[in-house]
Amino acid sequence: MKYFKKIRKSLLFLSSLVFVFGQSALAADEEYSYTVRLYAGNQGQLTGSGISAPANAKVSKSGAEITITGLKYGDTVYMSPQDAAKSTDSKYYVKGIRRSGRDNSEATESSFRVASDRDYVIAYGISGNLVAYRVNYLDEDGNELLGSDTYYGNPGERQYVSSRYIDGYQPQALNMVKTLSTDESKNVFDFRYAPAGEEEEVAPAAGGAAAPAGGEAAAPAGGNAAAPAGDDAAAGGAEDPADAVGGDAAVPVPDEQTPQALQDLDQIEDEAVPEANLDANGNRGGTRMSYLPIYIGIGAAAIAALAATVFYLKRRQKALAVTSDDTDIVELPDDEK
Image (cartoon, rainbow, N blue to C red; front, side, top):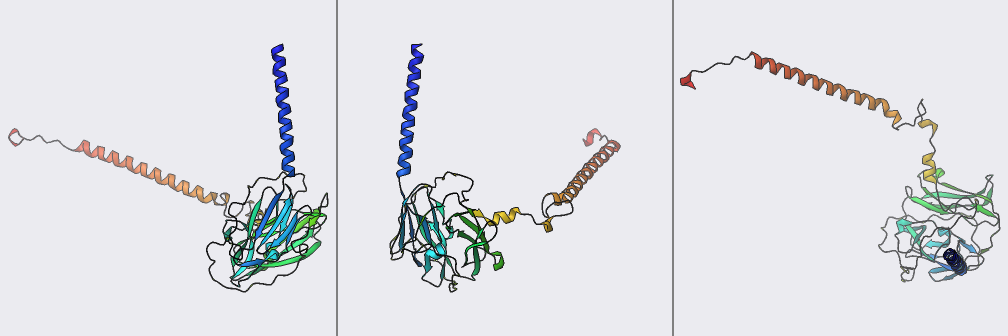
């Protein structure tokens, strides 16, 4: 009995240690603050607007860099690259943002929940035959909460778009992505907002101005010059910190109202099957079921060809056997052997 009592006391002691250290680690994590930096890149400059962060954070601008400090784990940062920067070269347009050290073609989500220190750079695209796309900010009934934004991009490219912070509301997704079409009526991003459980105070963007309301952006001038290699340097010639980006730890979801990190509109459209593509049996045109009669016909033809080949070979074998039996064997004289 004494032996079991010692084991029980040891287990209780170890459990207490685990609990104490766990609480200490959690408290340390809650007290730790994170920093997010945004650099202008080579083809433009920062405007100091288009960024919204919680009130506990500080947003500051210094030259070609915007720094957001004092962020807590799980805080939401909204960044609209098309408003946060402008191109200084007519050959390029502001496409989005990318992680530091990545290529311009690797644009990514610009609004996110904080889980680590991060460094971003404005991503630029080469101006071609640009098409307009519109971003709407609507409530659940389709009523406009903010004025629409109109931006420009190249058709055929995947365009990332950020939601905006609206006091008292939460979007269904922080970001959307969609392939732009030459038909501008299809280039629409509708962010739907629902009333938020708790109102979150938001710090103004650098320079004292809150994130701007909607408005139309002017289309950049066209051009077809190739993008220079190595676009990681901030304006002014300084290179971005290459190793300052933290990990991509997932942020826990607190409730059902938490917005999605990214909504892929291309995937949603692909999953929606238009009735025009369905046949009389309810099968989508071009699917395996619609080609089933063809497959059956090919299989039947193959079986028939195989049967004909077997029949021919058997007939030939019999014919050779009969010919062999009918052949007379002539004995040669001994002197001719």
